[in-house]
Amino acid sequence: MDTLMIVGIILFIAGFILIAVEMVVPGFGAPGISGIACLIIGLFLTADTIEEGAFITVIVLALLAIMMAIILWMLSKGKIHSPIILEEEQKKDEGYISSVDLNYLLGKKGIAETDLRPTGVGNFEGVNFDVISEGKYISKGASLEIIKVNGSKLIVKQQ
Image (cartoon, rainbow, N blue to C red; front, side, top):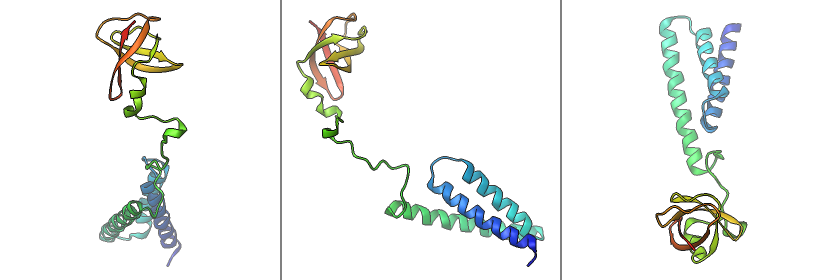
């Protein structure tokens, strides 16, 4: 083996590693571009003829497909940590509330922080919420009362 062949094989290995990193990390960035460049340069350094280059290209594409299938399998089984999946839980005792928990606000009184045309912001017990008026304009600073909770929508009326 001559020096160009060894450099080409090293570039192939580096290209496969960089593309594997790109398959795990979201987005299209430096590892993917560098990996593609390494594979193309490695192809030109190792192939002596056009036929040999086409054969190597088919082998590289097949290996990339196999590598992608293995990485997807490992991601789906949890054997590789995926940066895309949120693993933290949003617990109620840590301050997170879901839209179904807003029923505790029914009947609360507050102040309009913005004009309600018919939507705006109301402050109830020091916390700002997006609110919807009964359909009429309510000016900023007016007293509000929550009269209906519909999912995450808070319906208010002026007092």
